[in-house]
Length: 272
Image (cartoon, rainbow, N blue to C red; front, side, top):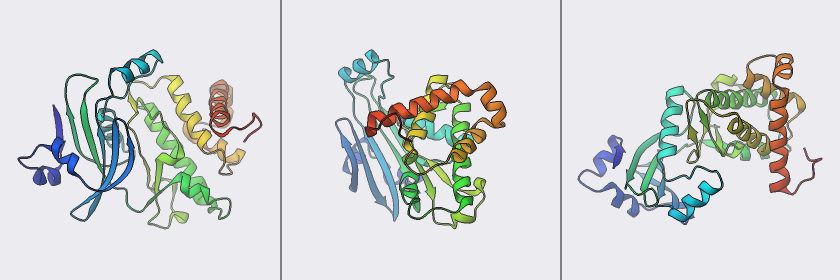
């Protein structure tokens, strides 16, 4: 068994079985599927999120392996990814409790609790307003540079998200974001339960992440200049160098994004 509780949960659950206590938590159920439940709850006036994982079963494990996918067996991926991102200085959720019990990979029980990201808004919701309420040029540039820097940092240190969409980046909107420098924008990457950690991120997974990110931003009115700004920030070199050395790579990213758009949005190849 693996168990970590911060001071708050260590005191509250002192002498109790955390795996029994999590099943008694009351709150708003955000998602409930066969083997995983996500819940928002309050404790001592503070908001938290918990993901409770039950065994996925051998059928699911075998199905994933036959499809060439690494099965997600519980909360361990997210726990490891959150802690690694914090070490790297990439803003994300704050984990406060984690538990893993069992030896049979098909019947593992696990959970992870994170602090609520209060005063934030997902980029998907934020950018949906851009067509009717355009952002300031400084905020637009700042967000593009910030997200490119974050994803670059993840990929350079062996982390790929696997669900890298703008809905999984939350901006702190409690401050006057219109006049902040890019490095002062507080942007948090969330929902890392499928993230993978390695010594080095394989090229194909980098392309999948970047393609997913591009796909999810196709309908928010990004310009060619915006896309070039993202590429230049991600690559940390001039566009002349990028397109002389990495043009094939970025074509693959574009193809991945358009394939996703056609598949999920029913769009033609002429879509944005």
